[in-house]
Length: 573
Image 1 (cartoon, rainbow, N blue to C red):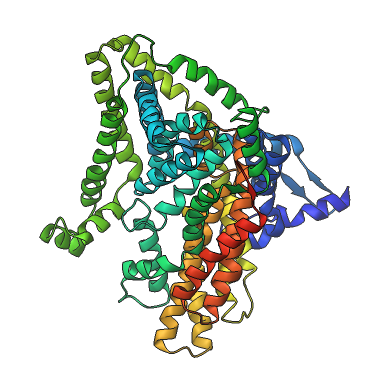
Image 2 (image 1 turned 90 degrees about the vertical axis):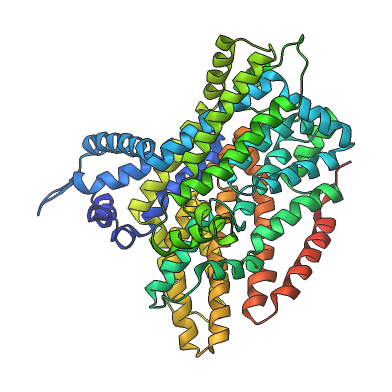
């Protein structure tokens, strides 16, 4: 028993968020490890996230419930468990009440209601039928889905919630597995939004770059200019987008995705036999939201509300961002309101969750008006359908609340700082970019958020890269180039975890949007994500750090992806 208490002594010294990384050490990894491991073992992501959150609050509760004296050391298990539970509730409540999270919840619910209205009017079915006339095979269906994903580049959430319901019937028609469909829409969300020069991501990315340079005493810098320079070095984003297209054109898959595609093509079972409760519920939703047989379905029933949604988002991002500008930025925008600078600045400062919520709400009102006018449903039935659409998103909301809570807990435990602390020590200059990319990938996978990873790692990576460059006496041009590479590694590595972590909100939303079992989506997508991650590291960042030109590395790696896919991929007829 005494050994147990000695084992727990470092945890008993719990102080605050700034020192937890040093005091807790490896124990800070326990919550994300439990959540991720249980998710794969049990295939129940709700239970896994719940266990991860509870283990985190248990660690945070230990310090106040370990009693020490000269002769006795004991742990009050009852008080610790009770406090763990109350802390968990507090974290969930905080996640719910956070203005940004609350806006995201409302945005998701309203878009769910809008999708329900569009589906009930037959708009989604009509679009699928129109695409089906052009799409003659599974290849063209996948390419169309990929292309539409690229078009909705301004926000990853909007991308996932729009593309999935619209293109899913077409994917089902050509017997594309739900796992592959979820992979396509997931791979054209964060990877696209992360490198788009006008998006809801740009504000955070540019501000982090600017603040990191301020930390090393450099203030006269164009953070947006540096962001633009990083785009060719965002290997994971670029290679993943290319890889998705090649799997469709070459009709080749590997790993669990190949098995899923063979199952879908040969048996017609687009979804796996082992289904989650959410997926079973989704099938019931399809029956409820099916358009009535006696109505004439029109593509405009979906195109008009979605076009209004996208148009209002663009206008909303502009004016919402304009409302928070001040000083020189506001003056420059007012001088030339339609310039590229104006759009980039306003979009970067906009509150995307609020704008998407407002746009989805107004679009839903338009959809209700259209349905009543076309005598598809009356007002009462329209409101019932809209509310039913909200209900279909409850499972997603629960997942997000638990994922957000876990992210807050690992932040308070100092998990990311502990991981980053492993970077301490002398590193050769050519190794640092690869190490930063690996750590960004690991942190984002552990905490499930790109924003959090960027915010954590950028203030540490930039000074570290600057110090190593100074130590190696880089000339000004080499120094700038070296800084751009390392910043690219932070921004790109942060995408990896957001793209394949079981606790990532984007992965959760893509599963729900595709109506694919969440853990099946994760299980089939991770090999592809790791494949591109390894290529980005070994034949991307390592050669770049050794002095090779990015304009040589990019085409060579694209060719390498094609060669490797042909070698290890198996044909799916």
